Amino acid sequence: MMKKMLTIAAASCFSVLTLGAAAVTPGFTMRIDDNKSVKNFKRVADLFEKRGIFVSFAIVPSTLTEEQGACLRELVKRGHLMMDHTPNHNFYVITYADQAMYESAKALPDVHRFDDRRKTIWFNPVIDREFKKNWHTVASISNNVLTLANPKVKIWPYGTFFSLPGRSEVFGIKVEKDKTMRVCDFWCGQLKEKINVTNVDLLFYAELALQPSDAVLRELAEVSRERFDHFKLPRPTIWVRPGGWCPGIDQDRIGKIYGGEFDYIGADSHPGRLPWGKGRWCTGYDKMYFFDQGAQITPEQLVDDIERELKAGRYHVRLSHMWSHALPGKEEEWFAKAERFADLVRERRLRTISMKDQYIERFGK
Image 1: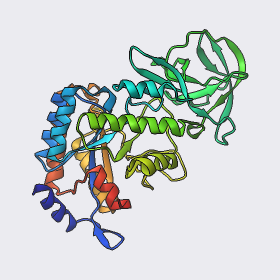
Image 2 (image 1 turned 90 degrees about the vertical axis):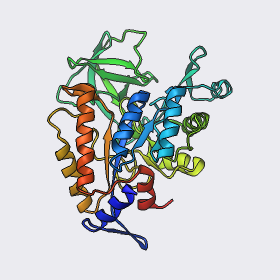
Image 3 (image 1 turned 45 degrees about the vertical axis):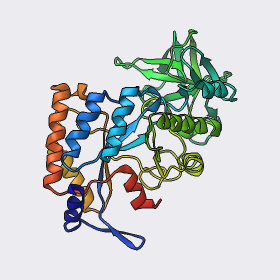
């Protein structure tokens, strides 16, 4: 009832979009990424739900416990949404609960290595060394520490990948707190060998030059579906890319596999032909963090941002990882700010909407 009242009130004071024949008032989505403790799953859902806001949770199904699964089933019954954040928060690593699925996956041509004890498989990317947005730079590597010949070249602090001349492997770079650039393997693991080369031309890869094969994309979707089924959760229809280490997946390939073969209706992806936010498979988010940015970010600022976007006729997503360690008051400060934020949303009668409903309103089923 509260949700309906908020929607009606919002329609009287905000821009209205015409999508097809229907007039729709844009809304904002409250999104929480990654798995939480049962206590925090419940606490965050209770806080927002009491104020008429239903949360869209991006969950990592392979690492859920039975207790977490039971908690999420209850939250779904109450109106919250569960989205697919990939089985292991990674495009190239999958841990299996089902032995038969694990044994079958070991036969895929993309397997790099596997661990029978952990039932985990590491997959190789498909590499396009001729991709037009790849780039070269000269560097030296001493005991796996990389130094650029031109220090003005900018390296992304995580998820940057390159190849050495004459070698087929793809290596990654981890930028440590002291700015040291340490070479690791493609899966962010420590190298067993020591690399020492001087002034060599390195080939650096654009995101679209490193992609999982269609077989690996299908495997990711199959394992997520199996885990959602196991926990008796509704099968996911929204795919959410993990951040961090992995290069992003081509939005059109997400649409082809997840949409065409697994009935997903949309995705938060990025690289590809459309800018982020302009298509069903690259809807994305406009703010990476919620209150996690630091103590200087206030609920009032966040709600002002949302109100401005809605008045301009734009849908809006607020994402939080609940990284309370970035706040002086830790977890309690995060929840205090979240409560103030939710109160302001209700006071200003801002329309809220799930990620799924946002896709349906913008792009159809």
